[in-house]
Image 1 (cartoon, rainbow, N blue to C red):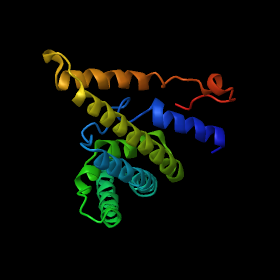
Image 2 (cartoon, rainbow, N blue to C red):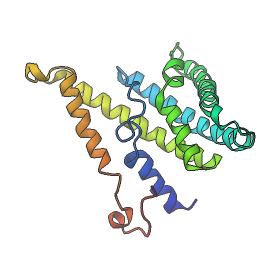
Image 3 (cartoon, rainbow, N blue to C red):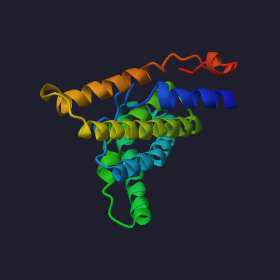
Image 4 (cartoon, rainbow, N blue to C red):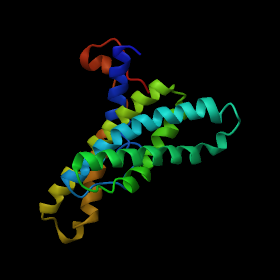
Length: 199
C-alpha cells in the first residue's frame, strides 16, 4: 500500500466513512465523562485493529475453506470477546483501578461491524489491521465530538419543547450531515494530490 493510498484510506475511514456518524455503528456506547470517553475510545483502537486482522485470518483460512461461512458471526463475537477481555486487563493495570470495559467493548456493534466490513470487502489481514485501526480512530473522534456536543447542550437553555433528547438529536444530526459531506471528497482537488478517495 503506497503512501497516497494510505492517506486516502485514512481520510475515508476517519471522516468519509465514520462509524458513528455515517454508518451508525456503536451509537449505543457514548460515554458520560471525558475520562470514560477517552478510556473507551483508546481501548477500541487496539481491539478493533487486532480483532479485524484475526477475523480476516479466521475467515480466509478456516471458515471459507471449510464451507463454514454461516458461522462467521459466532466466530467474530468470540474474537471480539477475547480481545476485549485482554484490553480490559491491560487498562486495569494502566489506570490502576477496575474499569469495567469488557461489556462496553465486547458488545459494541461498531466492533462487530468493522470485522464484517473487512471480510465483505475482501481485505487481507494486514489491510484489515490498518483499516480497523483507522476506523477505530474515527470512532474515538466521533465519541469526543458527541461528548463535547452533549456537554454544550447541558449548559444550553433551549425552549421547553427542545429540552433533552430533541435538541440532542438535532445537534448530532447536524454533525452527522457534516461528516456525510466528506464521503465524496476528491482529495486530488484539495491538496493537488494525484489520487482520489478510495471508496
